[in-house]
Image: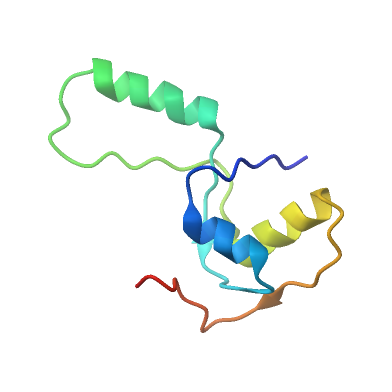
Length: 89
């Protein structure tokens, strides 16, 4: 079962409202894993760089939206659009 909290990602929230989605790869992660990683970084030795964090499963954004809609029993079709981009860039 797919669970999703919409709080933090306006781009993802916008994609979920639309029928066209990019096939870009994403790696969703549960908030408990984010909290654990943040605590580890905050309490650990300084990294002096960037820490990347991603969930264990790589999937396409359009497929993620399809799964979300299916879990919500939302029958709207998702159209994969290779030209879809973040509206803010």
